Image (cartoon, rainbow, N blue to C red; front, side, top):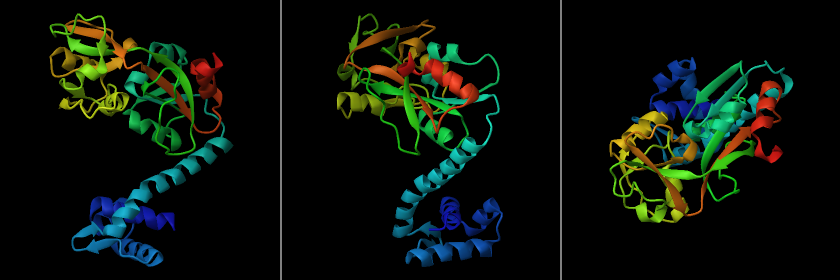
Length: 289
């Protein structure tokens, strides 16, 4: 399957327009139509209806494969480029907000760092495609257990730390003065859905085997300060690593006592890190400590 044809097809399907895809790709509309037709001929199935432009059943199935396929190709190109190129002396680090623990921040070089704070789901792709030298992802896990990460490319994951987690509640909340909280007892509470800033609600469901933890408010940013402000204002509970709790004005951070889980941070890289990336990786990799 020709990846150029596949990329053209994905663009047409995403934009629902041959003309818009032609503008985005820098082709003529005729060339785009010919490329889609060539892919349809190769696969022996119609992929798009023309009026309106929409994927057929076969086209929808192909789209499920196309994203990972194109990402792997881009990752392979980035991997080879990094292998044969010389390190530039700097470090580009992609990290989820709650993966930037004090230990990680202390390990950053004094100069030459570009820090990209991304939703945790976007970090592996940034590393795979060469947009970042290293990545830091995090999540809930049993003590010393690795995280379950999406298989976007051949990436290496190493532990970069673990710590207890806390439930954020308004200071006036009836549970705010507890010494500890059980997650299962909070499944029906009001929760903040903040996958880019806090620990995602699906992690909580997995940890408890519950279908609860329904969101009262969804926050689509990556600012931890905004998340804590929302929790303090009573818009919902949030689960965060203990080190993320800094300003507790109007807010209570109660330790989670059950289930026995920790906030785990992992370092991601493709190939062997070099230069500043290798130095940073050595400082935060707990397997070398």
